[in-house]
Length: 413
Image (cartoon, rainbow, N blue to C red; front, top):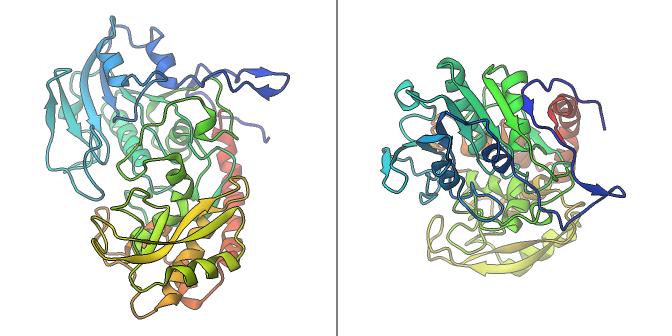
């Protein structure tokens, strides 16, 4: 592994437990939030906490509750990312206001409302802002940009920020997909990183803060026992869905590719029990479609023909033909290339009925949602030209390699 430098903002770095060079699965990964709350770092502090229901410890205890019960620190405010502090709000539903938590007796501020950055009033009286959010390893996931905005606010208002690290649920080795380019910044992509970035949220915090110049007073509390090759189910940690449509680890594994369908009129499976694993459209014959996808021999994946009726969202109550994505080899599977191949196949199935979704999308009104997700118009234009997915994927390899050299400086495990 390349040498890693620039670590002044990282605290409590420890190597994972090993036995004879092999990871001991019986030893659960210890989260950054657990290490922080078991320390004296918050003693005497009034704390603002950015979290949601997936902000749990290894025993399924809410970090908000652990902090509220802290004998030497005071929980003074809660902040929720997209979908809300209670994760009860569906996709792209802008929250209209703030609330009060009657259980913990503190205000709850939405950071997916009229503001995405904590204001001076929200931060008034706080000594430190603690962030404990579960990312899913994909550039477009908004929680990492909520974190970036919080770091900016902390810098502006002279507040210390502590990011508690959590596992990248789809591992920390593989990096894949198109880069975001200048002019396509949005709340699903603020910085030039690939679609699948292969970093933990703590590593991203360091990348954003240093390389992309936020410049906050940042500390990252690392995990113990996590290794880059580990998927979430190897951590011995309980899984709580980080947002309403990422119910399982299987969802997270395919999400870096099938999230592209948010920018089309193809159903990405919202309104089913398998969002992002089921994809389909009313104009598609499932068996022919799945057979065609399997003939592409994409690595590590099989496409099972499926017909489903979403209960809400696109094509609600209408039968959609397509497939369920079954990942058979995680190491070989390339989710972004697979998502590109699927998008091209749905378009080819009926070019007259397939549509790129119209704006607005995630606060953006002047660009196609697919382009916002992809990070530029290049991917859409390549699909429209009929460029094969494998050739498209080869085209982003140079940028991914260049990003890897930057990324190496901020890896902690």
